Amino acid sequence: MQNLDKLHRKLGYVFQQPELLERALTHRSYGARNNERMEFLGDAILGYLISTELYRQFPEATEGELSRLRASLVKGETLASIATELALGDYLNLGSGELKSGGHRRRSILADAFEAVIGAVYLDSGIDSASALVQAFFRERIGGLDPRTLKKDPKTRLQEHLQARGNQLPDYQVIATEGKAHEQRFRVACQITELAEPVIGEGTSRRKAEQAAAEKMLQTLTDRDNG
Image (cartoon, rainbow, N blue to C red):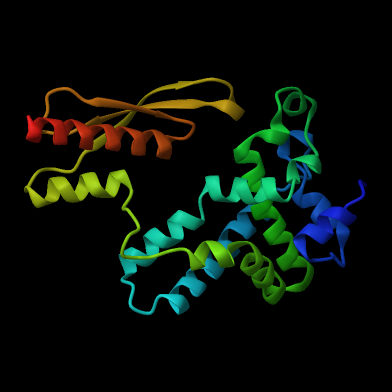
């Protein structure tokens, strides 16, 4: 087992059962005893804790605003950034293929590992310790939020744009998936009844590709309206 003392200090938490942290840092490419179940648990705990904190801090925010605030925090980019702050990549147990392809720097792997660490802390000593960990890394991020200025995501804005004009909702279809399983890129077509041709968005996940396509469609509609 690798020395995790430095990581304990960065986390501000010392595991009573260090094997839980070791499991949280083990990617599925390393073997059957990996962090996928802990990541599942950590994702749920993080969503709950962030939702609770947002509910307390923004008593006037609507359900939709709270959802957007949560989505702006509990997303891969944010989790990967925190994992990078913790240098989690230096501690990951990866299979040989992932090691060769730079898996310790892959943001999706880092994000999953951080969620797994949250799950591990919960399993080690309960919800209060998990809450303290989440507070430590999200306090400033939550403090910098403003429900009034948080921009809605492209898919939501496109849907509202179409609904306001009495038009049908957009249809999203995956038209291509390229690359290996751990580094796939998705191409998604966004089609609306107002336009004959769809627009295409790309991303490292289906969700990101759909958001990119929606953003392009909004720009297409804006250019058409201004033309």
